[in-house]
Image (tube, rainbow, N blue to C red):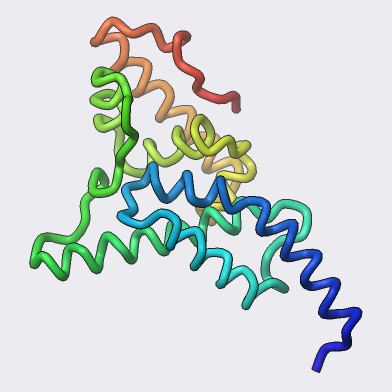
Length: 171
């Protein structure tokens, strides 16, 4: 049983974690969740239950990894409900108002490559944070990101978009 001071400390710590809710909801929305707010809420509920597991210094990669799992489970439930095939890499990719050429170029990447680019460019994670989110080494992530950027540049060049026109994050 926790003491009142331990409980207050946990509540203060969770308040810091909870500050990342908008980033978690935005992640879920861009990954095609039908209810991104629910994904954000469930992510925070899991974070509260597992507060000791949430890194103190930088909780965002842990939170995004949890949200990734919840979004993937949502895709799987939808595919089972609709008797469709297992979700594909594009199943949940959604960003409204995206330039059609950029969307095609992003869709030309593998799921892993696209996720690397998006975690850095749209979710504003550093390569080290994104690697933690994906459960891979920082070196492996940097290699994946480098290859993904190269393939994305090539795909964009075919459409006439200059890759320097896009905010791609920095490795």
